Image (cartoon, rainbow, N blue to C red; front, side, top):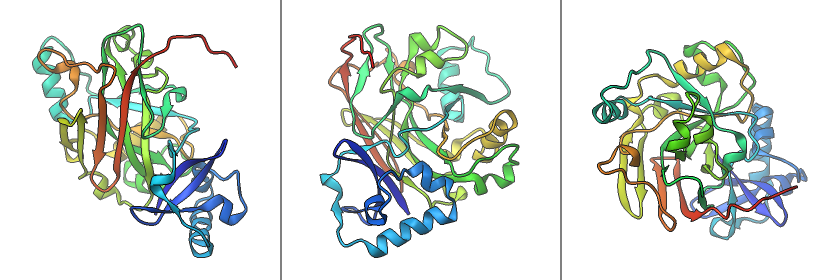
Length: 297
């Protein structure tokens, strides 16, 4: 089962992806126009039954290429990112910065939810920095409210998986040990293109991930290189705080980021960044220069 969010006029709608090119509008089929992917996850088995009923009852199917996709979860309550999670990425950083001391525990940071972006929407290059970087990542989406989850029980609280780009502004990332500011610029959380609900936890640990910039492969790694299992990640976070349906955990990036290349290869306006994960689809975002104009509600 794959769920996506798309624009229907001025509003957002939930779709169920049936094939490479067909989508059912779940909310309108059921007469639930305000339905969201987060609400489907929160409803648990009943939510999945809503989707199955909509697929069976739909009299019209939409073409995927007609739809303007949004982030599958456009309104998460929390968006976490994990640093230093791939062995090979740690080694490339160590080679570049041998003086760096790596912690013996998981390093989590917040990406502010205002950075959430659609799978094919532009990424802003901030006016305040020339160190814009990509980080292709597997995103885990929480499926039910949970706290104090043991690692061996993690599968029971996972709602699904999707592709994510943990876009990073390196100089702002290094301004503070928390890294939050450098990870949270508006538009710097593109994700999607849909949420895959039925992949097993075992399969999530053997996903091939590639990041391409203007067609050139920069990252080509596999989640079997994780230092920490997804179960360990969820155990760590839920020791501290309650996770809610729709919360997003970006699980870290494999080697090949622009900052560690010699010389560094940061993103520039006009660059196109594509992140693809086998079995989960791909997102693709063009870099644009930030307008840097004041906006008020």
